[in-house]
Image (cartoon, rainbow, N blue to C red):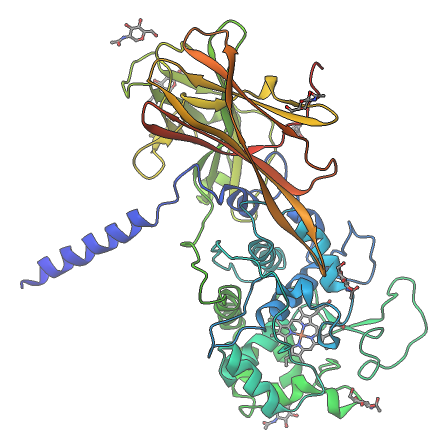
Length: 543
Ligand code: HEM
Ligand SMILES: *[C@@H]1O[C@H](CO)[C@@H](O)[C@H](O)[C@H]1NC(C)=O
Ligand SMILES: *[C@@H]1O[C@H](CO)[C@@H](O)[C@H](O)[C@H]1NC(C)=O
Ligand SMILES: *[C@@H]1O[C@H](CO)[C@@H](O)[C@H](O)[C@H]1NC(C)=O
Ligand SMILES: *[C@@H]1O[C@H](CO)[C@@H](O)[C@H](O)[C@H]1NC(C)=O
Ligand SMILES: *[C@@H]1O[C@H](CO)[C@@H](O)[C@H](O)[C@H]1NC(C)=O
Ligand SMILES: *[C@@H]1O[C@H](CO)[C@@H](O)[C@H](O)[C@H]1NC(C)=O
Ligand SMILES: *[C@@H]1O[C@H](CO)[C@@H](O)[C@H](O)[C@H]1NC(C)=O
């Protein structure tokens, strides 16, 4: 085979792999992608509130002397540490919620974190995915490595084995424990050094290791940090160890029994720690790789997604409604994300963002366009530039809508970039869609109203799946339950082309925890249409 042809084959293979990896909107992991991408302003999930800085304390800063970013990293490691490479069981699966009363998980960090994580839990965001995301965001906020994020973790429904290391155990025990989790000696040293470059050890929880000090209202739990830059993800844990200036109480504490870091750091005669101390960049890189493996250590039955990177162009809350005059209203936002250097200084007012679409039958028309202008979303991202462009346009239901495209540029002089969602455009079905303005809650019932096109054949299997979360015994993590309710035709609509279908069901508990969402589905003329992950309705009926 001539060399150029094998090259071509390789290129084709690479292209194939890339196209398979495309993240298509809408996606069941959209909420996680949103939380990954948007850290402040419109579209933010709120996860960054607890880690507004690397050193920030939990509960909006109220738990002084504590550090959310460090607690989240420790929680994730302790959760993962139930993995057993021999059985393939355990791993990052949220089982930590059931394990908080064990001595190895001592301290309030576990439950404090779970209380926060549970607020992001829902049908499409397991608590273990939220935990993985928390580490990705926290490490980035601490100037640490950019850890690739995958979703798809499934939450455990019971505790795992008690295989989290404790400081009084000897090196052989730790080596075996890490090996069972899938990490060799060098990787064990790496994980511990990377973990202990943020945060510290608390006197209230580890009185055998931390000397007693008088009560300090600014540090009520008596934390002593592992290195002098506890709120910066740097290699000082290693430089201080190697140059003999460390005050790490798990390395040079008065109690030799609990100096597990010293035993681990020296386990390969300091070779790994010396390399970390010498090269800050390779420390970051090694930590990024090890944390990625840690987060992706899951029960063997779990299939993780491809890496989810911030999407360059993504609709946000983009939805159709039927207006009183019988026209279709398309509203929501188009989000643009970029890591291009020029993006950092761009004025969104100067950007060109054009929406175009294909009608119901897949046809284009020069009138099917809308020019978007910047709204004041003021959003921020840890990874680059992000901005939202409001969409509002009215459509004739006779023509309708099937697919959206976005053409955009940083300014009018630049060539437009065509965004087509991995090839086929951004699909938006005008056949079965939820009518926000007509859906409501009474004291006892929830009513969800859906418009269904009436000129495409018979309607069958129309239903709403409503997802909300309930408490579980023994853990703060929630469990998602589904309410399945058929949709029945209740009348005509403002448009001759749509009929109104309604689902009424007993209203789920008032103070729904975590993320509530619902999907609407119907078979119309032999084809199934689903609108996923609609947000909770809040308005009262008749208001
Ligand atoms: C032999 C293995 C390990 C032992 C014995 C150990 C032990 C400890 C102890 C005793 C603390 C103090 C906790 C507190 O007072 O709240 C601590 C804190 C911490 N550990 Fe480890 N650890 C080990 C491995 C790891 C690993 C592999 C990671 C992460 C990859 C990690 C991440 C952390 C973090 C971030 C903190 C700081 C928590 C905070 O500031 O609230 N540890 N560790
Ligand atoms: C050292 O730690 C061990 C294990 O926690 C404990 O049994 C022992 O009492 C401690 N010694 C001192 C002097 O604190
Ligand atoms: C490892 O480094 C520490 C701290 O510099 C030192 O005390 C210790 O003797 C070294 N151990 C080995 C085996 O090199
Ligand atoms: C984008 O919109 C502007 C303003 O309406 C228009 O001049 C331009 O031709 C549009 N470009 C494309 C590719 O649609
Ligand atoms: C384009 O759409 C308009 C209605 O918006 C319609 O009047 C016109 O006939 C369409 N043109 C073509 C070529 O389909
Ligand atoms: C966004 O920033 C602009 C300019 O600083 C300010 O005028 C506007 O009020 C902000 N909007 C929001 C929603 O925060
Ligand atoms: C709630 O729904 C039930 C069953 O559809 C119905 O009988 C009842 O009248 C409804 N109550 C209210 C207040 O709408
Ligand atoms: C954490 O919360 C769970 C569930 O409410 C509870 O069973 C457990 O005792 C708590 N753990 C701690 C350490 O407070």
